[in-house]
Image (cartoon, rainbow, N blue to C red; front, side, top):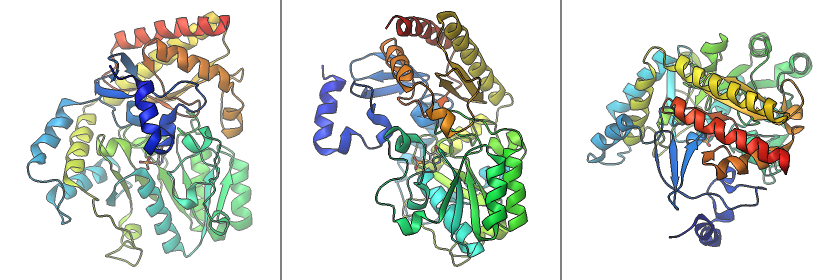
Length: 429
Ligand code: PMP
């Protein structure tokens, strides 16, 4: 049997760090990443045959569990017709109609191939329509790896200690203004000073790339207000929150409407898909209707559309998101109980189908400074002990956890039993 350790060694020969995306690398965990062979429902199975209850869900898309039979069937049905035509197809219109119906702030939508492309294109659109260069983002928010957005970023950029990457020209990075998340005064002050130069604010309406940090009351509303006052574009990056914190995303959950929305992950059902959209007025500036260029050889690919449509359709069953949030509640309450019993300083935060675990004495975590002040070593020990006990959490203290509808009460119980042992082991160490 080939082990993960052997496969990792082989992978490192020709793949930088042995991985095709840095968050997979188990940075600082002093063990090789686990190589998975297959997945089913709530479980991942590694190359050595071990089963894990999975709370990563391919970083979000697998909201109904892995290898969802309806999603697979939709892809299979299309497969023999060919993989990609580079022409319009009817299924792209079906997808666009569906997105516009589910997210009423979107009247027109353009499909792309990743979350990175979605945010990069939305920023270009905002800059193009306003004729302004400056953009405002928040510390620890991650919007993919395009140049303008890789400034004080979260996720792997943060885990790997490079939140502002070398290779981003200073002349471009200087247009990105980074403010503390949930800091209403900082937003007000920034817009008082230079609001009329700001093309857009881009925000994760629930921050999921520095663990899980909900917006404080009034935060998203303040963003909406200052954008209105200064004719700046408000972009919600709902790549993670879209179709997860509620059917209509964070914008439905919090009742704040952005001008542009970026989507990814769930919208592709596990295939490489992203999307960005907004009002017809704004989106009409995109090529070929308008002058702002945006394109993609594989964009709107029929297999990807089939997977995404099949998944989105399943989420429309009444009560789906309530049930998902209920599962997250059960998990988080259970984890809290066990941490308290073990005497470990730990809290959880959650919104809908996403959650986070923080090793801290703070009663809540609202921003990057507080998130990075948590005990990273405690997280590493907890992660490792959970992995040994068959629970796969995101391998970083700066990532959210994702629940799926395939997680049964028994799976959650298995997780809580593992946590009880893991927390006890941490106390002994
Ligand atoms: N925005 C957010 C909020 C994300 O979480 C991510 C990916 N985790 C992205 C954008 C980038 O998406 P992708 O990895 O598909 O490029």
